Length: 112
Image (cartoon, rainbow, N blue to C red):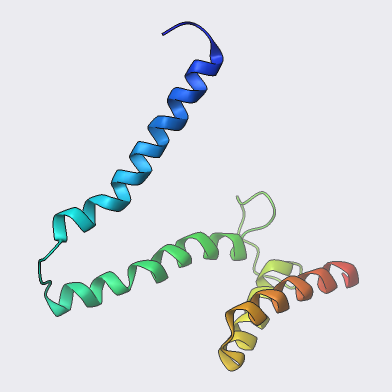
């Protein structure tokens, strides 16, 4: 391969595409036609909730730099998250909840 940076970028894009495709397709290939135990299916159902929690909780509980825990009324993300959770619990509409959260955070940033 030449020392051309464009070739490296193409190589990285193709490599990332292959890794992403096979990491998503491999479970379908391996498990095709097999019956999983109900306990395993139930356990797999918790994975999206666990991943979302792992991404969301640090953002809600830390300040802007992500290094210090900030559980106070100055943390707008935490306030917005709590109010949005309550809103979403009663409304049960994902799109409306997202729009509500965005608008609420904008209003809180304007007020505070």
